Image (tube, rainbow, N blue to C red; front, side, top):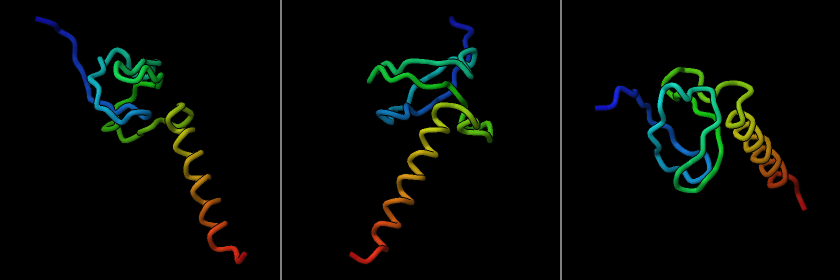
Length: 77
């Protein structure tokens, strides 16, 4: 019987749920389904994704792109 403890995290690329060992928190891991690399972080920790992590940066980039698209849609053509 294994003594490892796992948590569930969604892959930010393919959105599949993955079991990640707790000892990998804060480290780069690879999705077994799509081979995307991302930082392992527990979403229940209250700091998800952690500021400065690759997931946090990607989420912020998506927010900025959405705001640009909203501004473009409001501008008369």
